Image (cartoon, rainbow, N blue to C red):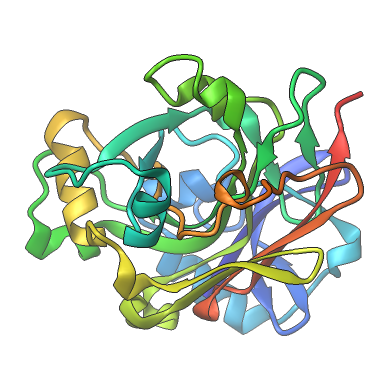
Length: 282
């Protein structure tokens, strides 16, 4: 099943994508009024059954999409997790994943503009696989890690490269408002299947900029979940970004940065295509 978050008639809610429409599930499954709430209460299977029985009720034109999880407690990001990207940055091999954070208010939805800030012209794309945590926990084993996933989605972890390099910490370049695109929906594991062979591709104005498969990850999805859970409790609705392939604009000759009027797409296997225009900050 594919779940999404949206605003309809001024009210935030969630639903399921069925055929070419949306089943509005807000408040209909044991009173859950958000996708995060439904995940945390273990209601996704019940929500999916209800959606399949109802059929599409509203059109996409009737809603304004939100980031898949608008209000995660944590967004944990993994850097340098594809060998080609690690090599192009000239960073050494590492025994542990590089971890930084993103804040929920830095996110935008599918079709909403990614914002190029006034303070920088170095806005870069980073197509990534996003994991949405279902069952939380601490010290999760790698063997059990996939059972803690509620779903998968596409993400564009837009980066302000000059601010990223102001110090040894990445965070300042990763949390500008409107730079992290998340969507269009979350696909549950039962529909998505085995993630390991999925292709991932980022396109800027139709040109392929990044292309890889998830089998190229240096640290696997189970390893990432297990490692993160060693030092912080994972909670339902938390989002984990798993790293970007090589081909980022900052490392090209000459560099390629996103600008007003551009359109960037992130496509991952069965998860659909996340599409965002780019607009200057006003």
